[in-house]
Image (cartoon, rainbow, N blue to C red):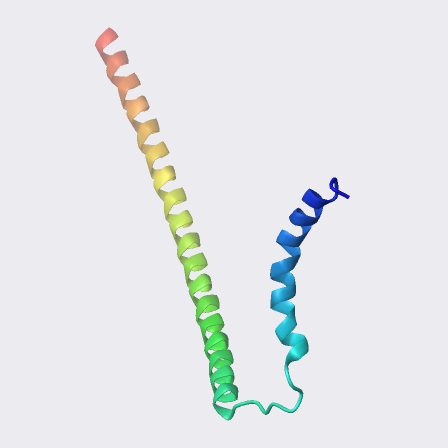
Length: 101
């Protein structure tokens, strides 16, 4: 029996909080009426969550559109940089060729 004692202590460490959380659910009286103020607060919170969700979705859409626009601008800037480098290499080639003649 002494070998099981440490095992029981470990198990009770995890089971005790679960039992303490579950006991109020089993001991609550069935005839308790819900407070109308609590019901009103719950409905207000649900409405706030719905509104917050809509705002979050619209913000995510705006961020996605801004990221796409930024990506397009970066591609355009990269193209301009490549063209500028190509023109610089071409002009350097002409300058070296004219110096060698």
